[in-house]
Image (cartoon, rainbow, N blue to C red; front, side, top):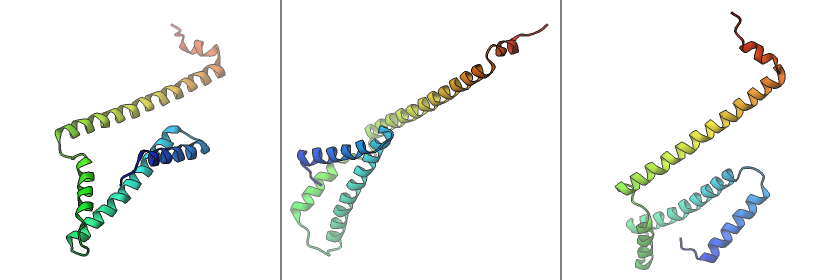
Length: 135
């Protein structure tokens, strides 16, 4: 679980090198990196969970030093039921929804602009005669 600064820098550097070799959106690569990081953290936490379960079932003899380190890791994790966590989570969730909404609006505006431009290039000045009302 523990890593020093040099290891973190090396992992980030390797991740950036692999991103530069691929073509595509930086956002996609960012989320891929986040996904890989979460997967690695889940795998490491599974090892800790399996160790604690084995100690609980008395399959192995507990090591107090390791159990203290596990407790330290658990104390760093946010508690999921505090009001502060809930308010921060709602704020981040609403921000993500807003970004998604603005992205959709921008994409649709771009599409409408392209449609108007195509219409104007096809019909040119004739489009103005469609707008006149003959009374």
